Length: 180
Picture (cartoon, helix red, strand yellow):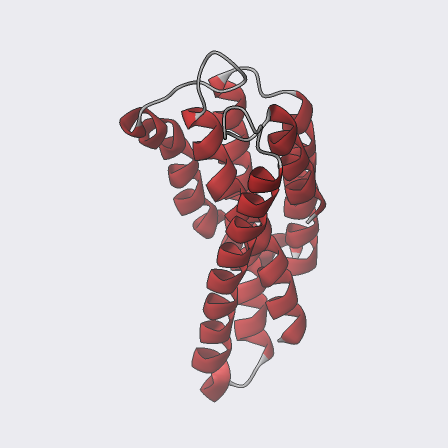
């Protein structure tokens, strides 16, 4: 159970970083590296990722039964790392971020579902509720910490004149999220 908690924490921390970074980049002024998107536009741009996250739960359970949880988690981690690392150098169009959000949301959902399924089948029946609840709490803490790390990176990379994060802060945050 502790390994599942540790992996869930790391996956969720990376997801938390993505959850903060993408809306910030969409909202950044369009005269620089950002897109100047409104709140409504940002919500619509993030919608495909939310749908991918919902679908991923079902796929994660099926993939876990077919290929085993370790394989599913490794593939999801590699896909997330590759996506975020690529995004560090390729983020000039909105569709780059939308596609990255879909891929990372799908990968995180598949991986955490595989970990949840593996945990539920590896322990005694009377402990399933406790163990799965622990994974959910771990997931929430990971997302919160990841968002805080991303915010700290953006804050450290602010341009003094404008008070907005420099593009290099986003690049650094994408690389850090990919490494996580």
